[in-house]
Length: 310
Image 1 (cartoon, helix red, strand yellow):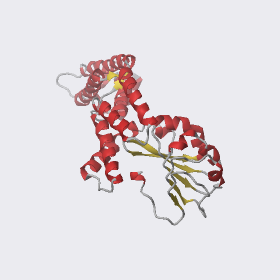
Image 2: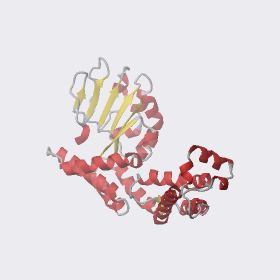
Image 3: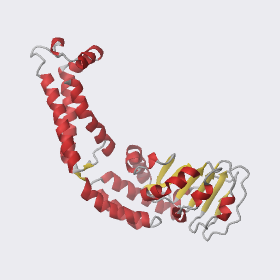
Image 4: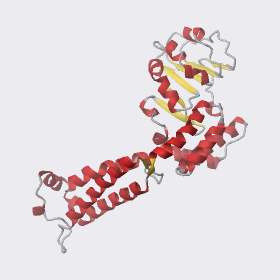
């Protein structure tokens, strides 16, 4: 029964942690998932309660003779205290809390439909803070930490763009939320990119090989309002990467490693690009490009740029 309780309840404990960042953020799931989760967690609680009833009134643990299954005996041999009254009660309480979280979970479909429409505006206008603030206000009703994080990051960036120091309390708040929830809020990008970073409340920067970027670009630009891309592995796929439609919204492009940069001069002009960072391309020379907004080409030996205010 102990193994059965783990089999039924632990997946939902893990799922709750993944969806809420192990915090108090709401849990959004479909009605079908919610019903299945409640049934399986109830099964786990019932199994633990049945085990607890086997503990004699004058004892603290389930008598070994009452444990008859092969799996149960293996657990008894390796972790006998798991059959104690205290451990059974504490594990039951964990699953009771998961059950309460499931009961409080909100319908995913309706919430996501509303937020998807607002997120589409963020993607369509990556340089505009207004859609981000609208999204922050909407998501803050059910996910306060996310709303706070977006608002804090937008405010921080606006201060830096104006040449002012950011409010230290906002910097601390944003960093704390990011440590807890970055994977949750990255919107699936960790599965596609080698590295990523948040700016203005959303993932704006990704790093991956030119070949991988060319293959995944449609997905990447559908998952985040990307404005800065770092490409590695320039020997292959740079031309294909530069040809991706989403490149037209970039304000910064960083290239790393050896490779032929001729593709820069033959590609379609990157209309919004402001910074071209070639500091980690050996023997790089400034390409002969005349893109409308390009104001800085960083070559080896140049000081590192501050992309936070772009």
